[in-house]
Image 1 (cartoon, rainbow, N blue to C red):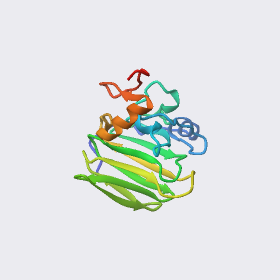
Image 2: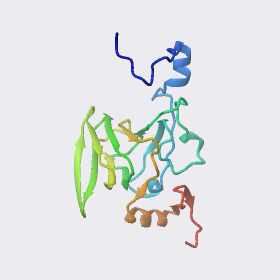
Image 3: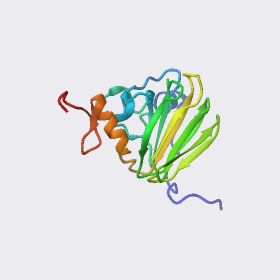
Length: 195
């Protein structure tokens, strides 16, 4: 008798047509559009990028932006996948951390991933195909290390609850100067001009 995972034992094998697979379970990078305002840091010089939520709820702060809805509607159990593209050289994400692991995969072009070790910034460069798993709670960021706007970085955030972004205090201060903040629930808000 062959082994059958207990979670699958006795369950029927789903019949999924090619049309259903394409419609409900596939995202074509060339066809998807994202947003240039998904997170608190994206108005700060040096942090411009397009965010495309592929599957899972992710950690998007701009919850009212329809273009940030996951492109694959099928549920993701325990993970979220986001693509980052249209990122000028040297731009990326500011220092932030998560209550879960975050994996970065350089899909096209080299990308730098940086983090804080105490107060010192450390950097590694990922070439296409390279992967790094950043530990829980470490302040990290990333930036496009090429001249190619078509460079693509894939971010995978794990866990059944991906949580919200915890920004480094310096990022919160810089973002306030651009008119952006987040509320107590981690949702992006525009500040009054007087603030």
